[in-house]
Length: 357
Image: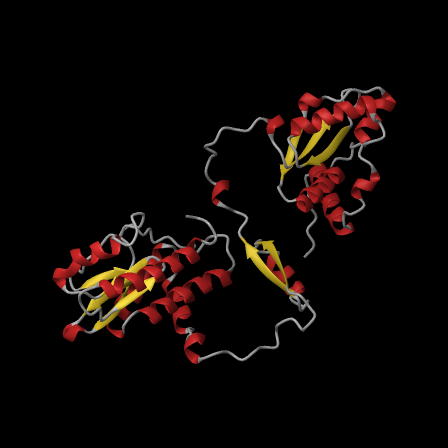
């Protein structure tokens, strides 16, 4: 479970299993549907136990369970297969009794495109699943679910009326001209969704043909709920950007490391004594005979991505005017970010912000 090839292996094993077990059944099987390890069969009422025995005998590690028809219907994935008059089969939309009915809330920090596509996708799904006899009831149920998630009914009705036929049902689409030209490779960029900013940045970047923008919500669940795990000791953390104050003056050294912070601090201690030319901390400590307060090291941020960690390090160096880092540590910081950080410092110093409209 959880492995990338789990679904592929399950599909292969189930295909072999069906080829082996179905010929052993002592009756004709009029209906057989399979999706990974879920099966839907039409069998005589008195053959349930015999069918289960045959399928469970394929391998001792594979055991099936049976869910029989109740009230002329049986659930299969997100559908309910209903047996109607004349043994005609019709499909209805199905949700498990444990389904929470929670979707993206109307007031959540997501773009309107995300919310609109969610509504259109769910209504299109029901239209594709449900038989016309059950469509109105399923749509009404979905309306109620979205209203419980804060969506106005007028908004839902507009999205429903704007639905277009499923492209898969119209046949293959013609190749569009919006794809990157030959020789160009598409690049996907993710941006945090900030209502007043992300849309403007997206409009600017959309002018570049080989760039595709994806938005994500920076307000995640972990920002809401308290942490239940024990806090990792500062010296045992890794992938961090850290700040070490100098004991002889008010200077600070800012660095980043992927290894355990304890090992990085031990290396700084060694460099200060033996290799003063290795980094700015060792040079400052050796030339001025200052001792850094290694036990008071502060973690400023964390990131497992090297490029992000390096960028954050440059931002913190730029932000701390009393740093002793080398000038080369800031050579890759864009002037745009330098300007924005300077505005942020001015705002903190003056507690006022000039707004240009």
